[in-house]
Structures are given as structure tokens and as C-alpha cells.
Image 1 (cartoon, rainbow, N blue to C red):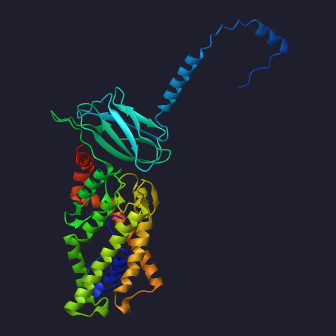
Image 2 (spheres, rainbow, N blue to C red; image 1 turned 45 degrees about the vertical axis):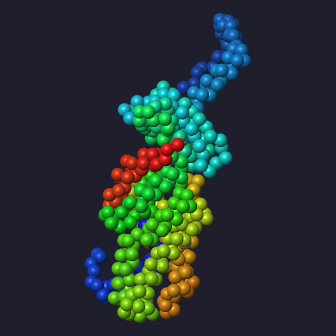
Length: 396
């Protein structure tokens, strides 16, 4: 869910578009020869004796087997592996750096590796799921990198750059997964299309830290009380008033106030349920994760299917129950405060659910292909600086 569009919101949008033309004009615009047995025997008897061979002892044999296994393990295409290179600011590999591999939602124990002479490291047989790498070395500030390993994947981490510590600094600087997620949410709350319209529910980081319950509620509340949201709700209520949509509310200031309250409630309830409450209970991430690579077709399919597929707290894709159930709950709840003449039966409620799901797919297409170009903070804050900012949020 990038741009959050609830089912009831889609219903109101559909009604508005149906009635708007009556109020405001708009433009939308080869085999060998056989040999006899006697000849074969004479040929065999003329062969020289085989040279004597000395078999290695058990220790040598075991060492050779270990060396061969290690060599085979370094094959670049090995599945369930995580590899990368630790470098300094000049692009030189840092030898001997300590890399700790921790698992977010897995009982597997922490693992450690030292980087080689070129700064490279590799973890083999890594369980699939979310993980965190803590990289540290003498005279460098510690850095954390989060990621998610799919089953059977050989994951190559982008170069990990370590910054030198300030002179006299005794403590290393790093952030926990929750601190990284909080920093990323703080940055997300600065994302605005054209520098104005809030665009908080999208992540341009491919391996963003999983959101805590607090992070999810923070996003939901911040998007609901954003000043621009109040203006947009007011504009929508004004169009409804002009076209006499939801006529049961009447006209005048009282009618406008009722339309405004209903519109604000639609958005607030949909965001609270689909963007916070259900994602917390079901451990799902309400954000849209920008793909950004691949063919236009693959990106389009990815975008449209994110309304029914989302990323879980374990970093794996799963059915997007939060969005679907949130839209359904929002559509049903709205029947409590809409005029009786405009309340929907169950059939129409599910129809509006389908309309809202389709509208969400269109919103995701916009997020995938256009929003990054129109969001000034995206490249600056996420691509270039989000992880670095998160790594420096706490000192230990």
C-alpha cells in the first residue's frame, strides 16, 4: 500500500466522477574396428607395469577433503549464501573486519566471519528470512546492514563502506533494527509528491528494516493528521456538496460538515485498520516496496499484485490480508454514519471492495513508474542517505 486508497474512498471517487461533469466541465481526457581376443591379450601383456602409488594417511585424506569442500563452497552460484565486501572510503578492502550475522525471526544462532585480504566475506547455509549484518573493525565505526534472503538464493550484498572514527572516540556507533526502522520511517514522513502531497507508504530501500508496531501506528497517525490531508478532504466534501452527492446530508454548512466528517472518517478508519491495526496483528508490512528494475511488464505485474501480496515481518511475501480486510472493514463501517438512502447492502459493499482493490492496483502502478520522479526526497534521502542516517542514530 503506497498511496493508501480505501474501498469507501474509491466509492466516493466513483460517485464524484459520475456527477462531476454536471457541475464542473472537465477534459480527460566413428566406431573402432573389432580386435580378436588373442590380439587383445598380446597387447595387454606388452603394457608396462603400473607405477607404485602411496595412499595418503587418514589425516592427509581428511585435510584434502576439507580443502576440496571449502573450494566447492566458494562457487559463486551456491544457494542460501550471503556474501559481500567491506571497504573503506577510498574503495580499499578492509582485511580482518568482523562480520556478525544475526537472524531477525529465526532461532538460528549468531554467526561470525572475518573478512579476507580483499575485504570479502561469505556465509554459507544461511536460513532464509530477514537478517542483520553487524560489521566492525579497529579504527572504524561499526555499521549495520539489513537484508532478506529468499530460499535458494545466493545473495550478493552491495559494498559495505566503513567510516573512520573521530580521533579519540572510544565507542563504536551502530543502530539496532528497531532504531533503523524508526529512522527510515522518519525519512518516509518527509516524502511528498511535488514537494506537497504526502507519500509516506512507500519504501525505496530494497532491504528496509521491518517496522515495529510503534512504527506502523506512527505512519498511520502521521498520514491521517497531515495538514494536506485536511485540505484534500475539504476539497472532496466541497465537490460532493456542489453535486449534492449523499443528498441525505442536506445542504448548507451542516451538510458540508457532515460530508467533511464522513470523508475524514473514511480515510482515518481505513488507514487505522489496514495500515496499522491489522498489520500489527498479522505481522505484515503496510508499505509498497519499489521494485525499480526489470522490464516494464514485470514491474507492472509486480505493482498490481501488491494489493493482494505484501511483505511480512519475516521479509517473505504473503497474502495481503491487511489491505483486503482493511478495505472491507472500512466499507462496512461507513454504513454506520452515511445517510440511510446511501447505505450499501452486502453485495454492494463487496463490489466496492473490488473497486477499491482495483484502484489500489492503479495507485501502485503510479508508485512504481512515476512517484520517484515526482518525489524530491526519494533519491536524496533514501537511495543516498537512508541507511547511513539510520546507522548513526544511536551510540553504544
